[in-house]
Length: 130
Image (cartoon, rainbow, N blue to C red; front, side):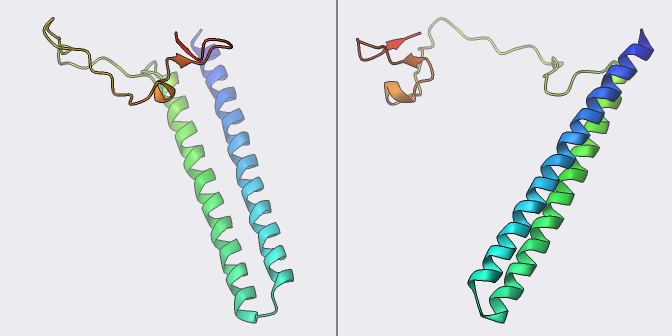
């Protein structure tokens, strides 16, 4: 079963890397299109040079983000293959959980019902809590 886990994690990593590469390509295309639009709308050589520099910065940012995503995906695969905790899930600590006493009052941090994620506006009543 271990080889099945490795294969599954490898497929997940490949899919995530493909998505990261696609996102980087879209960001590069967006930067290139923005550069071309700025070059077409201006006559000032300094503005054209600034557009080119901005495109190059966008391209390098996209490549850095892609490389960081690939490194993260590889680390997640290795962690999953080793049987360690899954990324994104918290593990239990060594300290006992904090306990509350019955005398502590419940404090609602939401100032308006609309800011409360439990608030659900009803069709006729103007709103209700879930």
